[in-house]
Image (cartoon, rainbow, N blue to C red; front, side):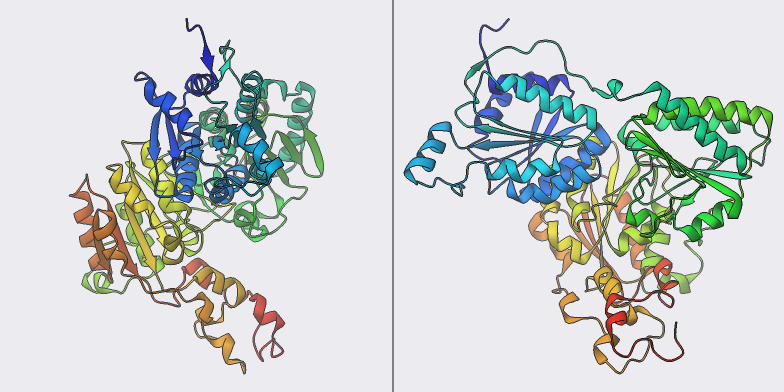
Length: 596
């Protein structure tokens, strides 16, 4: 037994006890003492991974935690930490558990700065600026300046992370890292057991069953919390209990997913009905006017509901440690307890009468090799994703960025559980390329496949250097249309319509100049970053590159996919003649004669 413990050793042991085995970040002298403590222990399971910049580190850590439980980031004061505000906000919004470890100036330096007016490196003159930035987007934030208090602050923050599955922030002054503190005792655990209220769970299930019994059809919406809280098997058990043991064949209760929860359950599952946007129209398509939507761990975010309020007397939504049944609200109900009791109640009901679903069926795929003319076609979003669907396997994880790639990828059938990663709620562009680093670290036996727009790629292209430096075989498909397409579509979709509406205002007829992107030779970036660069203009080009990638299992690739400037995924195109852009509504010539 050690005679004396330091704060750095205390934090290291606590992280190891939680199963942490990798940290991402950019080194700085304020955290060096902590990193040195890890390096000095040859038996420590923690690998310290460096990244091209803090933004890349933050997204890598986020993706790693989604697939591996928890992760950690290390940065230096202010200049490093400030770059992570965006990434931590995304992790907080999408409920991803990670620890941000920020080194800070010493207590002595703080005192001199405050009283003598001397600014040290990376300081603003206000010693609480960093922690005040991160408090609103973490479930616990601690500034550690006293070694005696440090163990209690560390334990409190880490317990909050385990309980809430969200980020926490630890700021440690440089002189405290090697100061003596108490030794770690016991182990830390989640406080989720204290959240459950048995009576509320029973009442929530009873209310849910009243709605289900009153409807002729029901469908499950499998949500992101199934993955976040490790309840995927429990959901499958629920499906099996109802469908295989009690329901007449052909009248099963099926399930859908949405952008945020895509692949939480394998899309090869026989009861899977598709990854859809659950707006009111789609819900009606699925269950008609007399059906019930049962959300299991699903969040009503804009991307998943088409920015509509879908709550109604026919919806049941269990998430965020509560249940909404129509207009009734039941707090302090964990998802695990709700699933278990709902399974029992549905099994009893199914034994009394059959349950049925009139649902959406997966559409047939376009055969990839449908003649030479098809192979010669210029690539579009639809042709790329149709081709990708035939190529991707259970050994791949598809990471998709916000914008048109996220929309186009919803139709791609993902055969593996957790085989799809996207930041579908926060929607920061650039997430995917850096997130792929974390995906590959979390699942080294899988191949990370990225689909990213050229605008998003500009944000974190340096992550390709991380892919190569880590020895990863990641493939990045850059869908290059030369513009910020999704921004143009939101504000003024007219250039994407076929044909466009003829306005008197020429500005509404073309893509706005501020949405144009600098022209990069994306396939040449690997000359500097490492890996192989390729470019595809046609389906035939893409098929050849697909083949080369499979024959190069150890190499990382950047593949430029040339997309026409005004091309959009067909799921958007079908709505452009009925939806109106923000600028169109404000235009004095709106609405155009004979339209809308």
